[in-house]
Image (cartoon, rainbow, N blue to C red; front, side, top):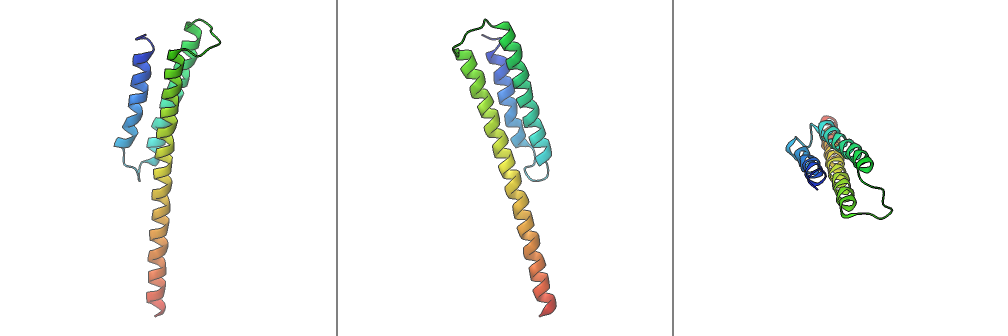
Amino acid sequence: LYRVILPVCIISGSSLLVFSLNPISEVEGRLGLGITLMLTLVAFEFTLAQDLPKDPTLSILDKYVKASFLFLVAVLMAVAFVGWRSHEEEDNVFSDNISDVDWGFFA
């Protein structure tokens, strides 16, 4: 049990580190860390599938790994959404400043 639960818990818990990075300037780093953790979990799942006996039904460990995978996907979606919104707000602020300058220049 500790060969599965503890590593998957560490991988999933490490995904929370993406929220310690700057959400606006380090979007690439946050996404890169999340994708790396997801690939790590997929590789761990392949290793786990080789070690455990073949069973057509999902065991509790399989469900735990799938839930951790969904958690990582949710974290990546949150990071992507925040990066997208911050980029969109930067564009709006930039275009608002340009329109203010244009009106001030032509007034």
